[in-house]
Amino acid sequence: MATQSVAAAGPAQADGPTLDRMIGQMIMVGFRGDRPGDPRVATVAEQIARSEVGGVLYLRHNLADRHAAVALNRAFAGAWQGVPPLLAIDQEGGRIARLGAAHDFPVFPSARDMASRHRPNEAKRLFGQMAAGLREWGFNFNLAPVADLDINPESPVIGALERSYSADPAVVDNYVAAFVLAHREHGVLSAIKHFPGHGSSATDSHEALPDVSASWTRGELEPFGSAINCGLADAIMVGHLHVGGLQDGDGSEPASLSKRVVTDLLRKELGHQGVVITDDLQMNAVTQNRSFGRAVVEAVLAGNDILLFANFEDYDPRLPERVRAILARRAEHDRALWELIRASYQRILRLKHRLAAVG
Image (cartoon, rainbow, N blue to C red; front, side, top):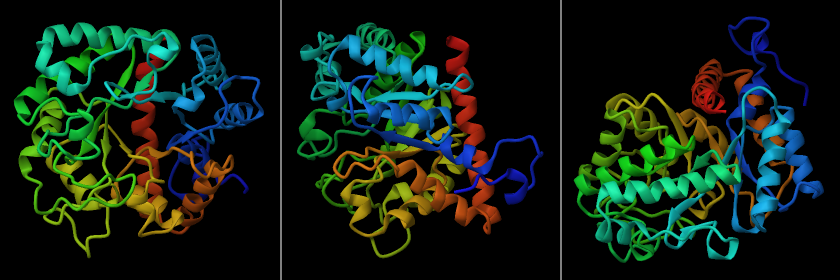
């Protein structure tokens, strides 16, 4: 589609960023291939160079070995000489770790084991080793730590995978702080997840939308609020779950697409002024009740800044183009949406400028 100028879509300087460029910074996408020479990788690098993509997500199939991963990250980072792309990975420790022994990457305990075996200062040392390794491999954004409370130890997505540090908010506060600070010391950003609290769920949001209306409590907000108040929230990831006490509707709306959750609760009530990133918008918790286009628009209207697409099962190299077209077409006639896109772009740039400062 033709590039839309900012002047055509809203009040901005003529030399300001185009609407397409702003939308591109909001898109984080998974990809295929594990080496720079792969044509599918070259496509993503070209999208980064054209500001059609603001970040990439690595999954296990992208990680052959250290040499290949470093080369990939250099290719992506070198594609755009202005604002650096976010090079993201899920590296929590325990079972949720894209890098491990098979890659000659240090193995770290699960969150539950970390809290039970190591005091926060020792955990910070270990988290520092993790962050140093990620930095050496070229990553600059870790989609962790988990700030969910261990309310349901059998939760298929949190408790059963030992992803929570504790059921006690104060304990979770300490380990989340240790994780974020250790990563910052090595120039790696963090995304605290899964707001507003996934720990009581009995359903895996990869499969269906968990409804935690009967089990969720406001105490689950405490680790997120503490991180925000202490200036530790580089970014916060919003989860795909439904909390009836916080949301309107018939129970089909994920918190990640709810203005009451993202804007009213997270931004206005808790005071988070930084970046908000969705969990993967292609998970069944989202797709079972809405179209791709509807989810994209609702994510932005809710107040999210970065829209995450794992782009795994039904890989689409043109996914960024589809997202951009959906939002640009709507923003041309919707001043409120245009303003939300502009605000997200500015928040993302502020976050990325911290990476540029680290070098």
